[in-house]
Structures are given as C-alpha cells and as structure tokens.
Image 1 (cartoon, rainbow, N blue to C red):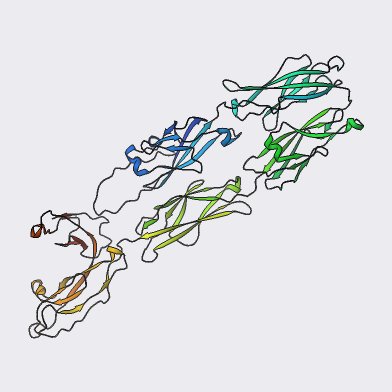
Image 2: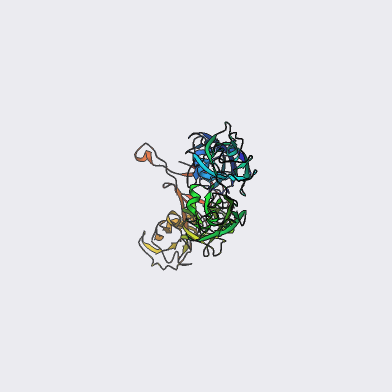
Amino acid sequence: MGNRWGPQGQAGRRRMPFLLLLPLFCPALAEHIRYTIPEEVARGSLVGNLAKDLGLGVRDLPTQNLRISAKKKFFTVNTENGDLLVGDRIDREQICGKKSTCVLEFEMVAEKPLNFFHIAVVIQDVNDNPPTFSQNITELEISELALTGATFALESAQDSDVGVNSLQQYYLSPNPHFSLTQKENPDGTTYPELVLKAPLDREEQSYHHLVLTAVDGGEPARSCTTQIRVIVADANDNPPVFTQDTYRVSVPENLPVGSSVLRVMATDLDEGINAEITYTFINIGKAVRQLFKLNSQTGEVSTGGRLDFEERERYTIGVEAKDGGRHTAHCKIQIDILDENDNAPEITLDAESKHIQEDVELGTVVALIKTHDLDSGFNGEILCQLHGNSPFKIVQDTKNTYKLVTDGALDREQTTEYNITITATDKGKPPLSSKTSVTLNIDDVNDNAPVFHQASYLVRVAENNPPGASIAQVSASDPDLGLNSQITYSIVASDLEPRALSSYVSVSAQSGVVFAQRAFDHEQLRAFELTLQPGYLVTKVVAVDADSGHNAWLSYHVLQASEPGLFSLGLRTGEVRTARALGDRDAARQRLLVAT
C-alpha cells in the first residue's frame, strides 16, 4: 500500500564481531512513506509493512526500536514484523472537518543510528453521514401577488462528508404551483430555492404542502427530508431589497467578542407595517450561530465568540429580510478570517544522546528535533537556531524536522558538559519563539599521553647502600579519566648493558619508585643513565583455570599483533598497556590475539 516519496532507505547492515575496534558512524537518511486507507477501519487493520517499505530486514527490527512520534497516536507499529497498524478510531470528519484532502502526518523514529522516517496516511472519506435538515417543518409565507418566476430561499441540508459523498442534489415533491432550482454559494456549496411557476390565489387555496429531499452522492446514496408549508398571504405590493447581493468583509482572528463585523441593509417601498423590516440568519449551523450575532432591527453583524483562523478561514452566511407583510429578500455574507501570529512554535526533542565520546566524527547526530506552529503562512514558518558558541549545529531535515549534529572537535579535558539551548522562532510580526534545552555529557577517550613532572631526575646515592633501598621516585600525570589515566612505569633504556642494568636498579610499575638491586661501589661504577616511560592501561585480559595451586597459575602472551611493539602484555596480570606514544601514522584500529 505504500508509495515511496524519497530515496530508498539503507538495508540492514551486516554485523561482524571485533576486539578493541572503535565504532564507525553512519549518517542517517530521511525516508518518506505514503499510505492511503478509508476512514473508520477496524482497530488492528494493516496499513502497510514499514520494514519492507523502508528496506529493513526483519532481524534488524529489534535494534531499530521503531516507535511513532505523534501527539495523538492513531497508529501502532508491530516491532516484530514492522507492520503499521490502525490503533484508534479514525473519523475523517472529526479530524479534518470539511477539508477535501485529509492527511495524517507523523514521524517514525529509529535508533542505532538515530533517524526520522516521515509517514503520511491519506484518509479517504466513506459515506457514513447522511444529509440533515435542522427542522422537520418549515413555514413559508408567499404573497398571492407574487409574480411567476419569483424565487424563495429554502433551508440547506448539512452533510459532514466530502467529495461525492457530500450533499449533491435536492428534489421537490410534484406541485403545479412550485418547482425547485439549485444555486451555488461563493464557497462552492449549494442551496435550494423554491420557484413560483403558477400564480397563487389565497381564496382558492390558502396553503400548500411540499416535501424537500436532500440526497448525497455516496454508494449507496443517503438522504433526508423536510416538510415545507407554504402559507399564501394577502397582497403586499413591494418586497424588501438588499443594497447588495453579497456582502464581503475580512476580520482578524483576534477580534474581541462583541465587535461589529458589518451591517446589511434592505429597503422597502411600502409604508407602515409593510415597510418594517426584520433580519434573521438562514442556512447557518449551530456552531456558526454561536460565533456571530445579528441585530434583527439594524442588520448589524457582530462576533459572539472567539474567531480562530486555524479552525476555519471563511464563513458564508445567509441573511433574510422580511417586511411586515411577510415579503422576504435574501443576501449572502462572506466573512474571511485573517491569520494573526497568536501561536508560538512548539519544540519537541524526539530522541537525544545523553553521552557523546569526545572523538566522534564531525556531523554525528546527537538529537532529533521537531517543530510545529498552528499558524499559517509567514506566521507558521519556523527558524530553528542554537544559542551561544558550541561545537554543535542545527541541520534542517524537512520543513519541520531538524538534527542536532557535531560541528567541531570535542575535548573532555576542556569541557565535560554542554547545555545546549534550542530556539524556534516564527516569521510573524512580531515574531513568537519558544526554547528548550538539552544537556550533552562528553565521555572520555584515551587521547592524552602521560607526562613526567620533570624532564630529568639527578639522583645521588652513597656507596655501600643496602640492596632493595629506594633511591628515587619519578612521577607522571594524565588528564584522562578512569583506566585511561592509570599509569605504569618501566625502564626502556640505559647506558648499562641490559644484563647489568637488571642487577643494579628496578622501578615499581605502580608507584614509580626506583630501587637499588645491589650495593653500589663508587670505585667500580660512578654514574649511569636511565630512560623511563609511562604507559596507558588499555584493557585487561582475564582467563580462568579450574585447577588450584600452581596448576591454576596462568601466563599470557601475544600470538599476533597488527603493529608489534605498540602494546605490552603483563605476563601474569593480563594487563594490556601502551609500550610507546601513539602517533598520527598509527592505525585507528588495532587487533591483538592473546593466548594463555
């Protein structure tokens, strides 16, 4: 059922085990999927298979952790097979009103890597609402002097459905004096008019019974009826006449309740009671009648409730003028509602990475952001920005979705945490904005070499010293954290022969204390040099033997390494440490094969 809007998504990636490998970053791709379903389908009905339409394998779904991001969740997703299912009742009329096209748009959020998938579900109208009249019986007075061809507006039926399922046609029961015609309002809706096709004689027949039927275009069609009782009135020479057939006005949506909108006016050439005109609304629903009030004596239209452009942009209202002799005239009022910037943008953090390694690549996605503004036009256009200087930036994904990505080098030793403030501002006058904050913690990586506190140490030792005595202590520090900052010490060079060196001095790997291994003889050896080096503790390999005693002692050695000499392995401890400083030319990934 899906129609793909954008490029095909990436298929599930092959996963391979590795040891001591740094993770790779793969940029997420935005996807656009479109489905079409009828309204009022049963809960649990299948909309489409997201896994198939996004190019995801079923075995990749548990790691994707697909979830729907929407204020009202009309749909659910089966995380086992990727099916998109109907999760709640979908009433197109309740969701979209009289809009010709009804689309539910939402985002599907995936993890590992973070990404948005943009879903649009078109809701098709079904003929589930019949036309309705507000009254079962309508009385209409027509003068016996009314001319053949005169028209009289009748009440319109209301139908919540749209398109072919909406009201299409009116029918009138057969009558020798009357026929029916349909007229169109400026907004495209139709209303019925009664046409006098033969003269009336009150003395011959004082009233007529008619039946008006409204029919929609659904399959099967639905209909409703109302009774029309035409009362034949005595002569009244002149009917009222409006100064305009249609009155048009534009008002802002923040107009205070009770404000004047416009005034309609009709005149009558008769005198006395026959010239007294009263005004009433016709062809108007209950909700609209609460929004607008009509002064029956003056014809002034005012607001009776709060107008909202986001709810409805235009109203077409019928007005009837009736004189004292029951003659009537009709006009239309078209009220256009102007949008005001009365809604601040909304910001939603759909997903965020609370912890970020300081060595991540530029462009790494750390948060997914959505914005929404109920206003329209410029008032609803949003600019999303970051405040202050930080190694992050906002990248726009679609009109209302963004990604927060890295835009500079991160250094935990300089900054351990970033409190990012995101601002969404619309283009209204004056503009409205809203803010949200996200805290990003920078995790340590082993990117600093240990440094000795002194470049060289001069040690004076009296001869005939006792063997095993401490003769000096060296000290180094590392700004990294945890295992990355733990330092061991070793002797890497000397001007003594290697065999002789081990008989003269040793250094504690943990404390940096230098010990004399034997008593020194000034006449035999007056001075010698040592070169010491601190090393990182990278990791620790642990093996277990079920035996006990000497049989359970294990020794560790390296069988294979990418770059020999870069790491050292503790024979008994299994601790893997750097044997020298890492350089730019060293590979970013290293693999060791360890045996016991």
